[in-house]
Amino acid sequence: MLLLLAVVCRAPAQTCYTGPEIDAPTSKAVEAAAQLYFNMSAQGDVAGLRASAIPEIAANFAGIEQAVLSNQLYFAEAPPSETRVFVLDASESKTTAQRAEFYCGIYNSADRVGFSIPNLPPGRYAVSIAKVTGENPITLTLILQDMGKNSWKLAGYYARLNSIGKHDGQWFLSKAREYQEKGQRYNAWYYYLTAWDLIAPVDFMGTPLLDKLSNELQAARPSDLPSATAPLELAAGGKTFKVTDMAAVPVPGDLDLRVQYETSGAANATLAAQENLAVSKALLTKYPELRGGFGAVIARATDKDGHAYSTLTPMKDVK
Image 1 (tube, helix red, strand yellow):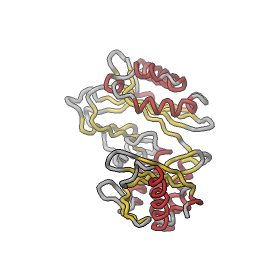
Image 2 (spheres, one colour):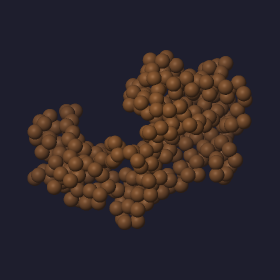
Image 3 (tube, helix red, strand yellow):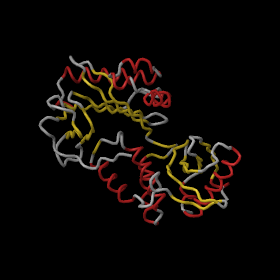
Image 4 (cartoon, one colour):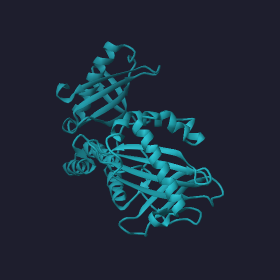
């Protein structure tokens, strides 16, 4: 996960405009394009969105297609209740910026917004952030690129739900702080991450609220999180397994914990199911706090030949 902590002052070649700062023709063109792409999303018009994308995005559209189809029903629940538009001008840049920084609004003001975008080619871009407050609140952030004469093509697509069941990002943030105070560092970490995903429209945006949340999140990061290069070794069922990844997985009304580990028997469903349960038990023995933070364990066995086998076990059944 990329967390962008700092918002810096605008550089001469990178300028942000918002609200009345945007000239009328540009504002009209950006708003029309953003509304069109939102309507396409609500209709599940993947082909139309692909045809409206810049070539680099159209050639690698699988991720956007999945996001559209996964969230179409949420987009269709209601029109956006609020849409914010920012125009990011990097047209004076001479080369692709390793990290383009845009500062919007009055520095140190409560409503300031910043964007920090890596590998941004010279050009003029727009960010549209549309919130839908239906039964399943969701935010759709679109990145648009001006292809000339105010023709704004799709250059980025980010859909994020704003709640899990009845719990919004502020609820998960409060729970993360509670877990932090109790010393339950793993629960705190995953609840902070979930709060971030529900509150932040995109990872490359900064506001006073998001900067504060990001600082809290980074301070709560456990030093021993498992990874492929530094796996967590668990003894289970007479074997030692290497856990390479753990993550919180949103499900309707709850969070599940996914744990991925390496084994030699992922191709054998019977053996993998047994090892999945053994790993789940060993993990909860090592970190008993996880029982109170998640509804189930999703154990995923993997092997060097590319096989994988997953099982979901409700927390109450991991004994």
